Structure formats: structure tokens, C-alpha cells
Image 1 (spheres, one colour):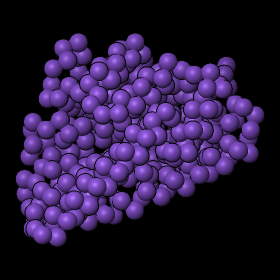
Image 2: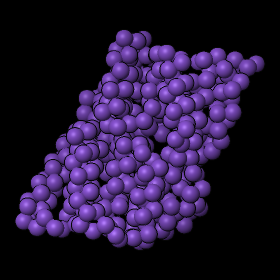
Image 3: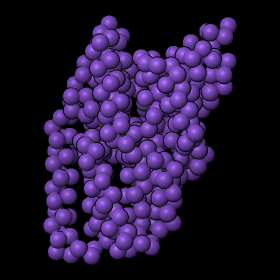
Length: 343
């Protein structure tokens, strides 16, 4: 147990980050996962009635989708996990974890919560099961429930996965010194170059970068890890550098990537609010808000209402976005504009 953390809440970013200096480890991770998938496939050709191997194969494809951003791995994961559950429909905790991770990756957070809770019931001492629940509940806006799940995760396995979630919890609550401390603990716990690179990248994110450093960092990053989140951040860096056409290309690519990966409408809402149709931005934000009332969707609703000249209606959503203490630069920019229009 990490005694210095009281009840915690967090969600590791749906798309994992890789350090721009970590191209070789990232490639090594992908190769390792691919070899693991091939080994499991060979095993299943010999023993096709092995539910555990099917669950492991499904989880491997979820991880491959995460590191490669290739959406073709999602249906492969679903087929493998479905077969595992066909062979062992009850008490199949590993398959429940896999289905929960897949649902989180596809931004079906309500489904991920349900699978995660089934996994916890089947495997009460599994930190992975708790992690699925933490991620889902945070995205659904259940801060208290996510806190309980994360504390249990830390009690079970105080390692990289739990410490990085703790760091994100502290960031969402505006406790940046504690977030850095949690990431330093995660870095100390890293057992692979990929884990260490992820932790260093997140530490750099908390410390902040100059505009020039940010532009260089995200240019190099999206060439290897083209997640929607990173593409949007690269677009913002290009905007700040006075390159709006290049920025627009990144936003468009982020939208296409999000759709291909089965993402939600949150990215679309924020991009449309700044660079598209305000009415469309509000439709996207309202659709997402109907599914989950988190600080993330609250900010999207606030900004979409503001750009539609409905700032008085936007303010309660902006209040919710910062209610935990979250002080993300874009969220604060949105809030300042809303407050300014009401003065």
C-alpha cells in the first residue's frame, strides 16, 4: 500500500504516450506483442478449447491497438474474447478484464465499468481488474467510485499502472507536486524501457515546455504515435507557431483517427468549437454529455455553449470542469473567455 495517498481517483489516458526519444523501445514493444500474439495463435491451433489462451490473445490485440493505433486489432480482440467467454462464460475474470479494456479503448465507458465490475467479482485480488474500473468510472464522472477502486489497486500492486493513475488523479485535482511525486514513484517502479519512457514523458508534460520545445516534441511524437490526443496538441502547437493550415491538417487527421479507433465525440466537439461549425460542436458535446458527465465533457459543453454565444448557460459546466481542481491550460483558457464575456 502507498500509505501517503488517501482515497484516489484517476484515469490513465486512453491513448498511451511514448517519449519522442523512445522510438526503438516502442518498436521493441510492438514486436514483442506481435510475437506474443503469434505464439498464442499457434498454441490455439493445437488446443482451440483453451479459454485462458483466447483471453490472453484478446488482451494482446487490445495492447497492439494501443501502441500501433491500428483499429484492425479491435475486431481481432473482440473475436478472441468472445471465444474465451463462449468456452467459459462464468467466472472468466481474464476475459472480463479484456472486454473491459477493449470497451475503455473504444470509449464505451459504461460497458467498461460493467465488465470491470464483473472482473473484480471474479478476481478480487487483481490490480488489472481494478484498473479497468478506475479508468471507466473517471471517464463517467464518478470520482468517488474511481477513488475507491484506485486505492484498492494501489493496495494490491503499487507499480507503474497504479502510480500513473495516481498522478493523473492528482493532476485532475490540481495537486501537481503530488502528481510529480507519483510519476517519480512510477519511474522507479518501471521494469521496461517502454514504461520508463512513458513515465518520463508524463513528467515532462507536467513540467511544461517552451513553445518551440512543444512543437518539436509533438512533431516527432505524432510521426510515431499518431493518437488523436497528440495530433490535437500538435495542431495547437502549430497554431501558436502561426501555421494555421498545417494545424488544420492535424485536427482533420485527429478526427479521422478518432473515428477509426471507435472514439467518442469529445474530440470532434472541441475541434469544431475552435475550427468548425459552432452548432455542430454543441451537437457533438451534447451527445457525449448524455453518455458521461465528467470534467472532460463538462469543459466540452461549456466551450461549445460559449462559441454559440450562450455563455450564461456555459458557466455551470465550466464550474463543473474545474470543480475537482483541474487546471489544464485549455480548460482555463475556455473558462477565462466565458467569464470575460459575462463581465
